[in-house]
Image 1: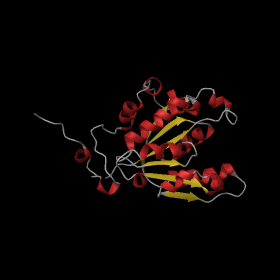
Image 2: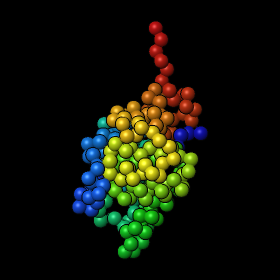
Image 3: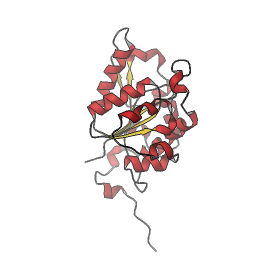
Image 4: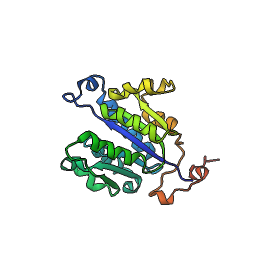
Length: 218
């Protein structure tokens, strides 16, 4: 069976909209963590997120430097409620699901989109980076829809991820202390650094042992 997808919940807190989250957010750490997740996952796992005007362009720039067909490895979900605000970078992603808006109701429109997103496929894990109140909402909804998935809130990025500590049923100091995000995510997500990348998911073997590069011998 091929590996499941990884859900990304991330944003850079806005100082005016959410000063309580902006005060603890580390923008450099947020950027580094999103970069690291893209490098760890792309070509190995499908990456799914709710299209965000700060995160989508970031992932596109990183993905374009990698030798994979990133349009096949990522899937965006967007609510038509935000149609006028869709980032131009959406045009570079061929896999996008648009959810219908609830007229005049942003919160309900987001709820519709998130429920559709979390029921759309099997997720092996979810990574939470920085963010505002929406991160907490997505954490709760994701846990309800995908109870067996691994949860990776990277506390060192600050913002809303710090609110998730009380919701976690395990302690893990690495989520607060390990700033080597590539190593952290390889370990937390169970993605071996020896795992090959594939141009498209169609070429990826279901058998994990066949996906690993062999150690060279003399």
